[in-house]
Image (cartoon, rainbow, N blue to C red; front, side, top):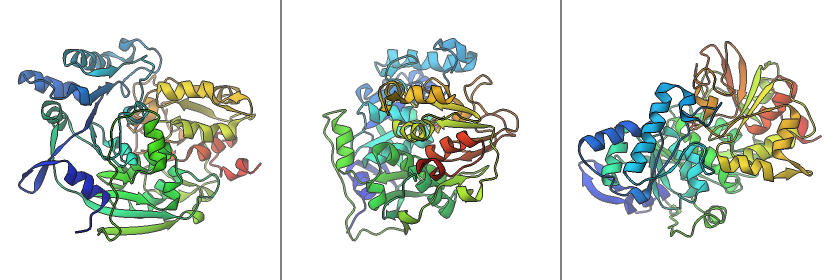
Amino acid sequence: MAKTLYDKVWQAHIIDQIGEDSLIYIDRHLIHEVTSPQAFAGLNEKGRKVRRPDRTVGTMDHSISTRSLAIDACGPANALQLQTLAKNCEEHNIQLFPVGHQKQGIVHVMGPELGLIQPGMTVVCGDSHTATHGAFGALAFGIGTSQVEHVLATQTLKQSRAKSMLINVNGKLPVGITAKDIILAIIGKIGHAGATGHVIEYAGEAIRGLSMEERMTVCNMAIEAGGKNGIIEADDVTLDYVRQRTDAPYKIYRSDNDAQYFFKKTYNASEMEPIVAKPHSPDNKAKVSECLDVKLDRAYIGSCTGGKITDFRAAARLLKGKKVKIDTFIVPATREVEQDLYKEKIGGETLMDIFKNAGAYLGDPSCAACLGGPKDTFGRAKDNQVVISTTNRNFPGRMGSKQAYVYLASPYTAAASALTGHITNPAEFINN
Ligand code: SF4
């Protein structure tokens, strides 16, 4: 029987059948401070060891202070999480990239950067946006704390099989339209529960034309449509990225031409426009051209969907030689991205200098205000501020204040809007 990409990765990892569920082998387990301390506590209580420490890698991203590298600068509760993760990793011989390490960063961006993700893998992490790694043709999903413990102990996971849906994005994207516009358009069309119980396979010329970083954004936000995973068949773009980082073996799976999907949808990239998600849901889609009168208090360019090097290249292209009109926060996803801001240049000026000279504020790599964080978190939304943000969620209170209004947007749209103080079509600046 013809199979989808998802079916093939899934079946290649089945160890056993438990009723309707399957026990699957997990190739890579990424851990961070939020969901793992309780999992380790359970493991330690039972006197169990981590089955494959060599397949488990940790970082610190959600709870770290954005003011100081000192672990206790983030408040007692967060500091305890971080210290516990460090202790657990040491005790169980797990490689950890802690605060201040040159490779530390948001887990979903750090993993690929370190070459930890290869096509055909199964990848889990105790964070819903683990779907990001599906960009590599891997089967990646977020898991809960008890499942983190199970994977630590056994390197396996009991899961029910998802249904596959196929989203084709054909044609070529117009200049200034990014992965974020594509995914906001899709989520707006199918709704926040439109992919519930499904893995979304993305295909088509426009998807193939995306960089790995942009593919990661599209897969990451499958979750905002209710999907279990997002996945993209690996190709030369994938292999270029992976081979620069690792010589680990991989296996490329492809959907059969006559594979059956429970749902198929096709979009024409050439007709796409800049999109925002209005408050307070990622599926509250509007064209940027419909929101030009929305006045803004701040812009935020960061997170696992908007803090990668491609996002900053786009933002810098617009901000070069100009000044922002509103408070604008730049937060690299990882230390590696931050280092690249010092190296990459546009017209002889580093991206870092472009942002500084434009009057933006530069933050330390972390999740920062994507999930609000403590009151002093860099870029955290205050009071009833109106924010344009490259993050992936805009529920009330997500970026801090419950009264704030957050518009999700591409890095181009966020940068253009930072220059004018209201929601702005990036074409206004890209063509000039
Ligand atoms: S940047 Fe935001 S969405 Fe991404 S992992 Fe951190 S908190 Fe989650």
